[in-house]
Length: 437
Ligand SMILES: *Cc1c(COP(=O)(O)O)cnc(C)c1O
Image (cartoon, rainbow, N blue to C red; front, side, top):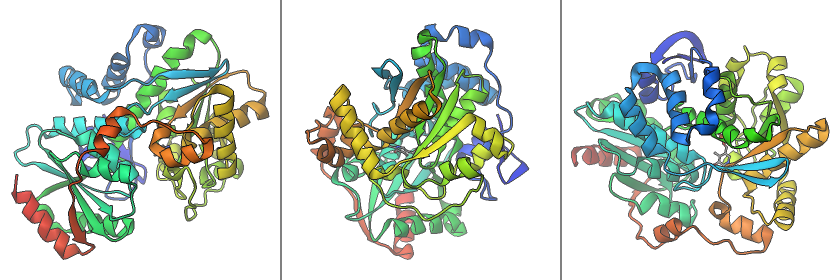
């Protein structure tokens, strides 16, 4: 697999290089040079393949000989430890539930795959790898769970003290083993600044092998392609055109769907659904991409004013607005609309939507109304309602039980290293940490 930088088509790297670098040095994003089309036989036989086999064939086609078959099967077996069912809400709508993993959000797919791929590439290295991550709460949980007990890799997660929810804090601090949580007396920006400084510290990097688990890493994007195919498989017997509605923030999930389509997935159309952080819907409407500061909403994992994967989306359509518009429609919704949708869906179908998935459902309903579409809509269910327990309980006026695995986690003790937001303190600690194995 050959990849290029969205800022420089002549910069080429292998899959392995892209995974460990995360970002190209020119601050672009890695993108596959060539998107192979899946053979017709694959599409025709999809209905008799299980999720792992679908993922295997897609990855073999994309990544090629950089990972041998046997290792790839192991990687996928360790990644796909939970299902992605389409739950039908009515005869025209299904929710693709991507939240049955350890952190109750679709990011578990990306984090687990990246961890397994890094561990594979890392297995013949003599020195261990340290993954440094700063988190405002959400992504950290998926990364911690994804890398938990991965051989040859230790993860250091920095989070702002008192600024993450109790459940999020437990997801970072209760695992232990190869996961170390550092509680910073400061803000998320302070955590991010410490991580950035460490990556730029040449002397430090001569002593420690550091890598990031960035959300824009290509290894987090690839496994998101799998479940679009898995969803299509589950509804193809309906023999209707399929529209995917994707609740979006940084647009990684939507980009993966668009890639799946270019690889031959028979998807009729895509919907980019956002909260009031509507940079992409505005672009789709009028052709101007104007990033702006993010606004806080109840679907806070999508509070992104300058979505990083937009550069990848542009590349898929030769940077041509008109072409992108023929594949993707954009809609944005307020918190009030989100709340009303959650309530209505619960009353009508006894189905609990989390605020993010609700935005996806609103996107599908709006598209249906505006186009009189007779298609079948698949809404990506990006988080379990229990993940946003307080918000959802307030809106639905109904208690949500926590899944048993999370309940167990809440009962485990917290282990975190407390530290001021000071680089020399962090650097000293990290060097010491690197020496102790
Ligand atoms: C991260 C996240 C999103 C946004 O996904 P992108 O790939 O960044 O567009 C949506 N919903 C939930 C619950 C998330 O955690």
